[in-house]
Image (cartoon, rainbow, N blue to C red; front, side, top):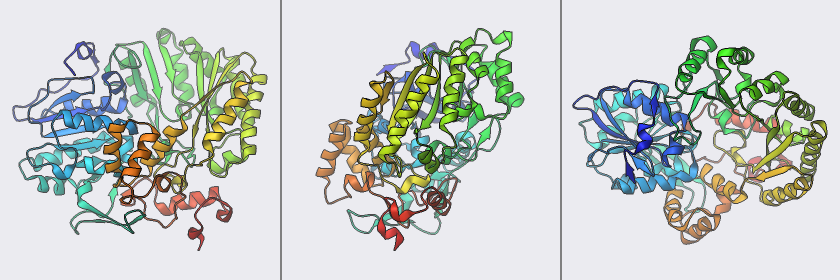
Length: 549
């Protein structure tokens, strides 16, 4: 692993780091992937800038391929965790730092290991044994609250530190919660704090301001070379019932156009001409039209503009022309299915007519390609729904001839804190992906299926509990294939449920969920209401019969 390579010297900072005090806390802030990937993560950038802007910290960055000079005795080691399979790299980096993998094996001689990011906020339980504490939710205020609290107990013993930190809203200390099971191979019986001094429920923290994230560093070594990123919106008002990005990050928030968004854009464009507008549904910013008008002014003519996925019925010829003017050739929309009925089930407020209109507007505005996101295995999906997806793609080809069509298609994966968290992965999904591939490629449509096996692994981690930590330790040595996970399940047979329990089974609505003690934006009761709205006749659904007894 390289130290202080040219990657760091190529960085252009958009903030001024603080000068560390003589007794600053030695901290390592890691991203469990290569530098080019980590430095492209807006969340990692901003939290790093927050940490190094504090004079009471001395911060070194660590990636899998390079690092800044590292302290010999760090007091804090943090990880920004954005992609599930990066857990392998977290364990490897802990070994690199000569830190025991499990929190129970660490002593006061070891640093506190903390983590945050979307993977841990959604469901930290499969990784709970590896972390001393987890930061749940938005980091804007939570990170400073964590460091302030740590400073008050910096000289205390490890147990005192953890108990004190557990009192900070949004800080979850897994070792202070006991999990019991109906039996070793069955569901959870209860999750309880070790005593009355530990909060029974940890509330995810939500930043409610209108100044959203913007890049703190621009570099040619990023995966998206020299890009400056600004967060236009956070969460999504549509609330598709499978969507973690919507439910976990509620409520929908928008950046103030004049107060923060345009000043941030102008600040970034002083060091680069590549601009990325981020958010689950950027075109639903209430002043998006005004933003586009501003970016169409002459002083922005040399800006290369990239847009995250946009809501289909907001695709206009004007938007398409703006993208073409700023060196973009395609636009991306999420349609999920060609079935109007199925879109109603998942709360996708969209019609086939609007999808066709979006394709026509994209072509009229000069775009050469339209990328669509779809999904198979959605709850209540029938073969006829797949036929309607094929019919939709044919309609798009006829309505906008010459527009290059790409359909990226994944398998439905249940996510924590969403209405569909109780539903398993449809075992027929792999066949359905192959069926769509056969029918669409014969029509000259570029079909790009996501690996079904990867979806199974994703579901396993998404709905996993603490027992998975032993399996994750095994699979890191076997490789990241589904076969490796099956091999590990065989080795651990009798100590935990089987793969089907976590992945394919529909769970009882009254079952204790692994994340039951971690409160997201909405309560379980509210999520159940959303599920029952989606599938009113639960008798004919794939839900467990015991739910209805």
